[in-house]
Amino acid sequence: MLSKPPLNPARVRRITGSFSWLDHRLIQQGFLARLSPAALLLYFSLVLVGDKNGVSFYHYDKICSLLKLKLNQYLRARDELIRLDLIWI
Image (cartoon, rainbow, N blue to C red; front, side, top):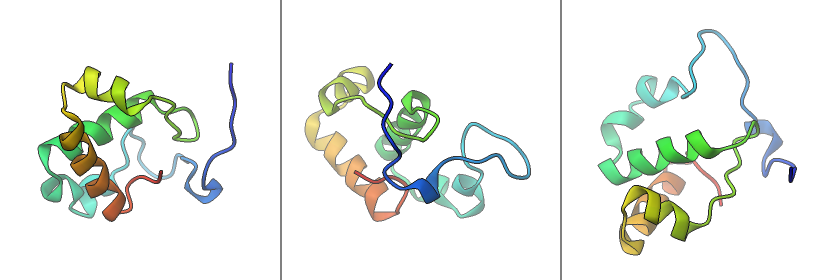
């Protein structure tokens, strides 16, 4: 199995307080209400396929195929998540 270091070690997932596969900040900081449906779908999918360091090795074409997104929809959703500092590329 391929192992790569995290892009940002300070962002490695840690269990603190209550536990969830998804970070509670999505609700507590209002991200769920602000994100477009495509950005929510992309974020949840990236969380599902990410390794223990939160790194996903899926290529955009695979993601688009799985989520039934066109490339421009994927790019808008990805850029939205980047702007909100929810993902790094």
